[in-house]
Length: 205
Image (tube, rainbow, N blue to C red; front, side):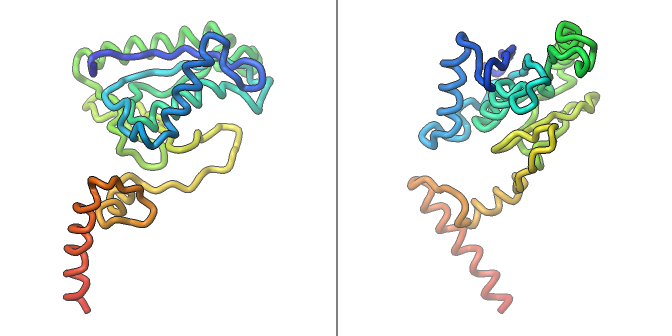
């Protein structure tokens, strides 16, 4: 239910793969996120937080599993309650000096976030964000949420993908844009919108 919050503590293993105990879940989640039969709102109402464990010595695969799970959940319309955090086994690069300290710092923020949610001061991401960045809708919370769409924005300077805003996507769907996928059931509504959109255009001409 919407009152429940799922916390994912996941490690990245050899070659960017999940641990054996998490392999099936990761495979299922990836397939579900990329299967049009489930729809983009399959996990709508689910609230979650992700803490990934990895080693930045392995740059190419650093915290890949945590980042992927975060992205796949977002693709299925789950709502992140706080920014994904990453623990680093590499003491030299760890933000707090060790992976244990990284987790303790995240846990403190997580518990504060839960308390704010209970008091009604903070709401999870609405999903209507621009280029993966959004802010809490609550009055007192200003913490930004690292909302990623389609592909993660990696800190190690991977090429940033060109994305459209949710408003642009909504407009495209409203007029039946060629880039939007339309269910057969919605085809009648789309055609109606297109006819209405043509009227003001003809008047302008």
